Length: 190
Image (cartoon, rainbow, N blue to C red; front, side):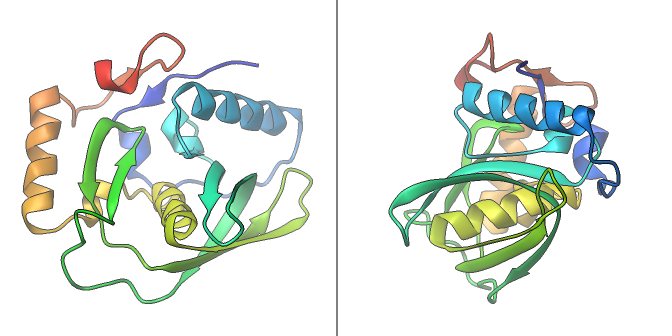
């Protein structure tokens, strides 16, 4: 279908909770196809609808699952997140790095629960459950956060938060209306 521009940190749609999906139609299916195309073009592992400017509660993912040693791919609509306890210590810079397509090419250690499960529905309204540990759990938390109006830099602490704020200023981000097009740009060039 189409690769859509990805909104950059500071755009109001990224900082506002999304609306539940109520209509399951061809328009929704087209959005999901576009989201998969956009995620692939951007070389991402997850993408929330508000990252492409649509304030609906859904995300797509194509993440490694360490348990089965393969990628898992799908869509979750109206997800509800459950997690194990989130760590209260500083994240490990060797194991907890996290990035975001809405904060292109920047990576910061981010504390996340080791286990997560989302329940929701698929494009047909059929219930789905996605559960994982490690990287997949991180992905599920990250994408659900987006739908709640939270960007991963909102979860940073200490020196990692300070470094993220400097990166946002250095790149001229943090204001409404900025986006990048993964069909013509690499994240590193934004």
